[in-house]
Amino acid sequence: DVKVTQSSRYLVKRTGEKVFLECVQDMDHENMFWYRQDPGLGLRLIYFSYDVKMKEKGDIPEGYSVSREKKERFSLILESASTNQTSMYLCASRQADEKLFFGSGTQLSVL
Amino acid sequence: EDQVTQSPEALRLQEGESSSLNCSYTVSGLRGLFWYRQDPGKGPEFLFTLYSAGEEKEKERLKATLTKKESFLHITAPKPEDSATYLCAVQARNDYKLSFGAGTTVTVRA
Image (cartoon, rainbow over all chains, first blue to last red; front, side, top):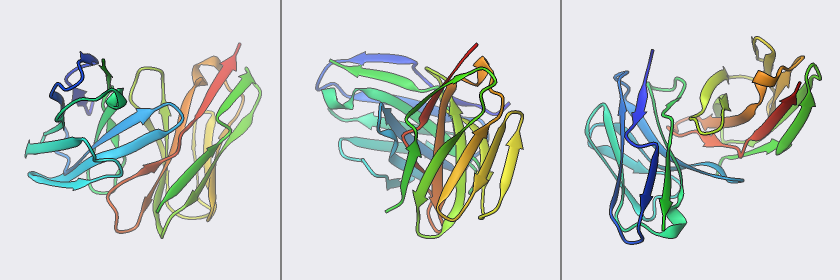
């Protein structure tokens, strides 16, 4: 079975902390994505990567950065966490234009 | 900018009561329209991809259809295990990303 694994299911952080969310896929997919999901707003794209060390901003990149040093791993970084970044974060991967495979999500609370 | 609007926001059904979910979209050249199912506390799971108007796909009690402006997800004789949030997404040609709607939360009562 294909798998996208997010390192944490729940995280609680303090305002101003640097936060790392890790995502690993075992399908050798080229493309990886980070979305956040908020009630009533649906999934919004933060960043995506189409190759190692390559990245592009999505619709809401402010306050976030990403890193993709290896094909299977895509990290989302909150440089200085704020309360408005409390959300469900979903990582996904896909090969070319095929279907997206999602991880189980990380529920982040910033206090 | 791609836009996806799903309606209704929530749908409560009796077991066996068939219904339809709507996904209206605007996109500059459609590459694909995707339907996903999401259970509480989990990531979305893929259901269907539709590529061109007139296309239909079926899986168990679910059937997805596509026109040039909207897609419908028909749920026939639903069971309680069909309770979930159903998400619609579109991808434009020459674009990597999928744009998602806010979803329709379906509750099926026994």
